[in-house]
Length: 252
Image 1: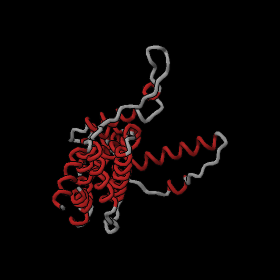
Image 2: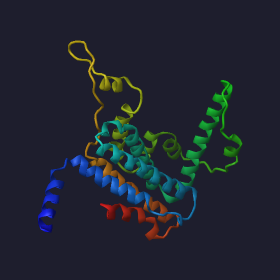
Image 3: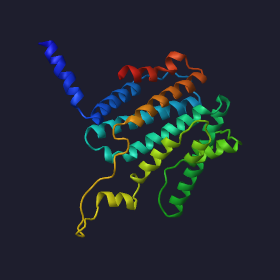
Image 4: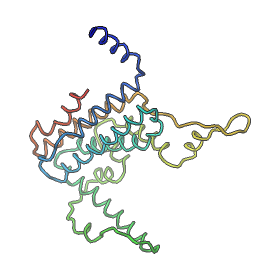
């Protein structure tokens, strides 16, 4: 009886659409990585960036899997866009020499601080309250890179793609594609409200990029492994640094 049940379960699994199997796989992996305790990782600016980006990426992965399994993968473009961007950022940081990573992180923080100051000024100039603590941000002592490639990578995602020795253009293309379906573009409007030949308006949805999550899966594995390399270089024990990678593969 148990053999018959097992056979039916295997047959049922084979009959499920690929995208549902991939969504299950992705969700298990994301939950496993997010459950890893990285509290004992030595604290540095670089390790904080690596762990923070890792968690943010797999949080997006979890949401993407849930939406895909629910038949709403076409609406997950904002989440996929964030995931692709986080992947590029982690690979950008991991690809540069270890000696450059701290200044690269500080250069990003300096740019973000400048943008926050502009937001604070804009809000106040237009009569709106602002809860941005400019003084607290200015108190941070940052060591900003003078390297033009690092500055360009910190400033723009395109610069990060160009600034690595890796071929990240496919990930960048996916990011660009999902950006189209994230923002209030005319293309997005046309997909949700297409016109018919008889001049009536129909209903539709944007395309589902990476339907079976194949590119997502490869990116997630590479992202987790790169974070492991970064954390090890920051002084974490190998077992701790690569715990997210181990969790990923054990879950799948």
